Image (cartoon, rainbow, N blue to C red; front, side, top):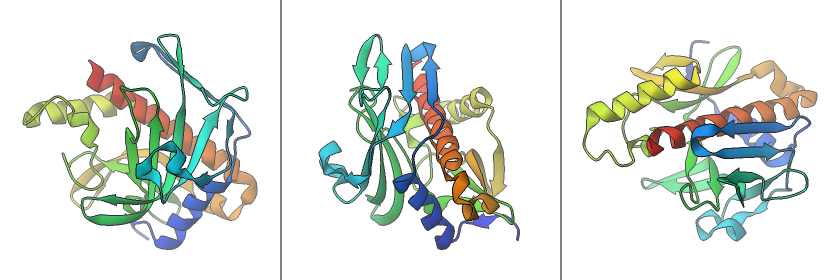
Length: 221
């Protein structure tokens, strides 16, 4: 099959991995520009997520832990927590059933500082591509947080998107007259092998967090 929108069966498989699986290998990320260090060696059991914020009341929430501590992120030598929520989310009058949201109790990030909709992702015969739209400046699948502080300067908004691609060095894809940033890539054969689920989870989380923090670096400049 040629590149196209992900089917619902594969959306549900990826969603299930994010809700149910755990890590075997640690995630360690440092961002000097943000004075940030992040460690994850475990995810808490998924539970109804309103305890993380009222906006998450219908989602599953999972806190990230490092050395048995949910305050797994340090910024300027102060400890904070980062977490993930997965499930229904209402966005632009559309009910999205498979949203993935990163949140934190760090004020500059805040609840829901990075998000993606699994149903916006792409697939071909071999792979599922977890993507965000680089061509759109607003609306579904766009990286709207990159617009922070710019107002109506379209050239500056596109310049930030070029910076994001250049600094992450992630793959980009052309689909439906748009350019898409590939945040993570999942081999479809591995979805049929439960022994690969920990690896799929780690790759997804590591790349999603790297992408999200790169956006924060760019808008903080």
